[in-house]
Image 1 (cartoon, each protein chain N blue to C red):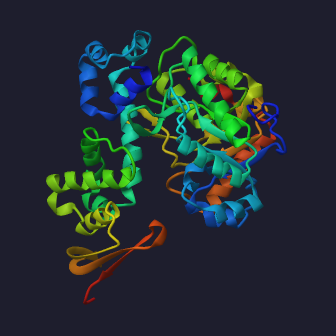
Image 2: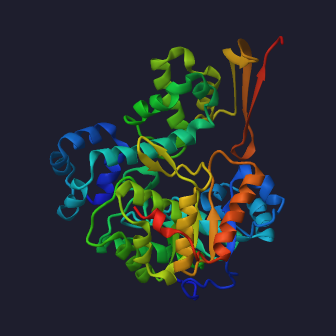
Image 3: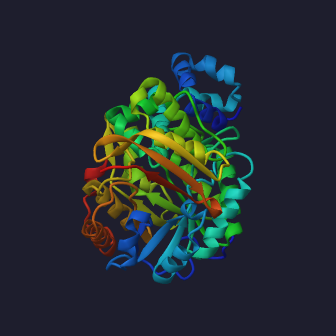
Length: 172
Length: 289
C-alpha cells in the first residue's frame, strides 16, 4: 500500500487512528505499507493526524448543515461534538454522499438524542435518496413561531432533479 | 506554462496588479454591483459543475476570471478522474480564464474520497505524479496552470524540503505557483518555521497569484477557517511576497461569516495599498516564527 492510500485509511477511520496512536509500527505492518513510505508515516504524530482528521470532519459537517438546519439548531452545542463521535466511525462515499451522510447522522442522533431529530428533515432526506416523484407525510414536530404543531409535508420532484417541499397546517 | 505556450508568471493577456475575491453566492449581489476596487474574480470550478452557465457569462463580461479547482486530486497516484477533469475543462472553457489553478494535495485515494485537501510527501516520486497531472489538466483546458500550497496539520517527511519540492514540481510541470499567504502563515505557526525564509527558498519567477483570508485559532492550533478578516501579520507577509515576486493577482477568500460590503471593500483597499507599494517598508521581522 502506498502512502496516500494509507493516509486515506487513517484519516477516514477513527478507530484505526486510535490503534495507530497506540501501536504505529503494528498498524503500518497490518496495512502493508510499502517500505519506502514507512518512515514518513512513523514520523506523523497522533495529535497532528487527529487534527487533520478533524478538519475533514468539519468539512463534512459544513456540507450537511444546509440539509438539516432544524436538527442542528435543536441539537445546539451538542451538534458538532455529536457529529465528530458519529463521523469517526462512518465515512460516506459514492454518489449523493452528503444526503447519505446527513441521513446516517440523523439516525445516530435519533439513537442518542431522540427528541432532537426533525422528522420533517428525515422525510426530506429519505425522499431525496429515493426515486419517488412525490411523497406526503403527517408530521407532529413542525416548528412554527416557537411552538411544535402538526402539519402535512408534501414533497414533489420536478424536471432536472429539482424538487419542492410544501407544508400545510391549520391555525396561527 | 504547461500546454499553453506562454511564459511562467506572465500569462498571456493578463494585466498586472489585480485585486479580487473568490466568487461565492452570498457575495453575488455585491459583485454584480461592480464595486470600486474589485478587478477580478476567482471561480471555484466545482461550484459550476451542475450548471450556472448564464452566471459565468455575466461574470466574464465584467471581470477577469481565474478558475480554481478543489477536487482534481493531483497528488493521487494513478490516473486523474476523467469525469471531474471534463467537468473542470467545461467550466474553464466557459469562463475562459487567464489561468487555472489547483492544489499540491490529494483529496481522494483509490479507496475513498476524503472531500478536502491533504498533504503530499515531498519525494521525487510525488513530483512526477503532481507534475504529470498538472500538465494533463493544463493541456486539456488549454490554459496555463498554477499550483497552490495547502495548509495541513500533518507535515510529511520526504527526500526534499517543501520548498525544494515545490520548485521541482514547477520545473517538471513548467507551471507557476499560487502562494496562499494564510496557509503559509498557519503552517509556519503550527509547525514552527520562518515563513519569510520559506518564501525566499521559492523561485520568485514562479509566483503568479496570492490567496489571503483571516485565520482562526482553536486549542492552540492555527486554523484555516476562511471566515475572518485578514489580520495585520498576514498583510505583512503578503507584502513580503509581493516585494519578492512578480505577483499578478491577489484573491481575497471568504467562505463563511460574510461581512457587509463596506468591510469587503475596506479589505480590498488594504490589499491594494500593499500591492501598489510593492511591499516596500513592510515589517517582515515581526512575522518570523
